[in-house]
Image 1 (tube, rainbow, N blue to C red):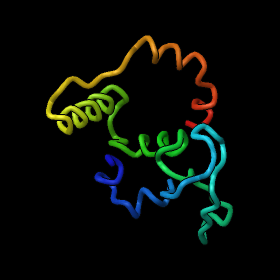
Image 2 (tube, one colour):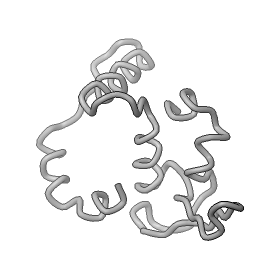
Image 3 (cartoon, rainbow, N blue to C red):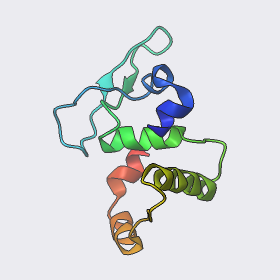
Amino acid sequence: MLAVTEHGSEFVHQYVGSEPSGVKFNEMILKPFPNEKYPNKKIPHNPCINAGAINCTSMIKPNLNISDKYDYIINTYKRLVGNKHVGFNNTVYLSESLTADRNWCLA
């Protein structure tokens, strides 16, 4: 949503598709998306799989450092839910990041 709001759907869908992949969310499979400049180009199937989500997140406020980007995203989510608390569980984050080799590779 944030990437499309910032850049428009035409731009975003040059880098991530919008169709179901038919595979698990963490599969490392891309769909062909050739163009004249890149005839072998492939992109994630959609933003709801890990590769697509990582790709879309990279599009949000690319000029900001990671801390400011995090604040921007969290503050946007807070506004969307009526300024209620939005956050994350640091214990889960630390645990997941220890075994996130696949997502680090995707990123």
